[in-house]
Amino acid sequence: MAMRVPDRVAEETSQGDLPAETLPETSTSLLLFSAGGECWGLPIQAIQEIQPLGRVTRVPNAPPAVVGIQNLRGKVLTVCHLGTVVGGGAGDRDQASHVIVLAPDDVNRSVGIVVGEILRVVDAPLPPPEGAGNVCRGVITVDRQAVSVLDPHPLLSLLLSL
View 1: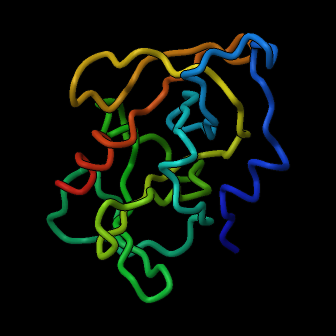
View 2: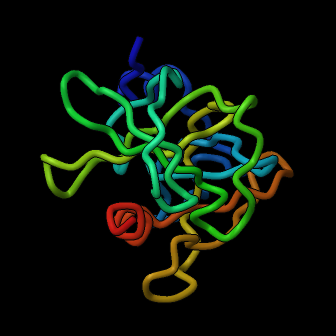
View 3: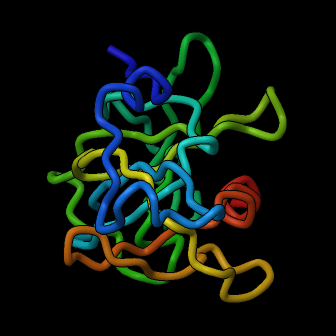
């Protein structure tokens, strides 16, 4: 069953390490998830939906980052390993449990990233961008845990170019 992120935000939004009155104007709601043994954050505006990891069909001669494709309500969804895309390892596929479907710029192309566990949604400050085109915007601390915040536009561009 697909989980629509906006519905979940109302139920699970918390304030991370900062009280509400000290949140800077650049704060946003981030979906926290685990992938490859690390904690990641992605602005919820960049997420179309979250799907359980179902049957994935491998694609011959696909780049290493491409796990395969899935049927998403009659549309082809390209499924990618986040760790491979950001320069880490592919991780353990057995620990993967969900696919985060990114909100596409182009309605005809959908792409998702395989993640281990969906943790929660928090309101947190966005770190300043580390550089143009970098898929990782920076690192923040939420509940004494380092969270790498992904920049959705370079990430989506990179995934769609695979």
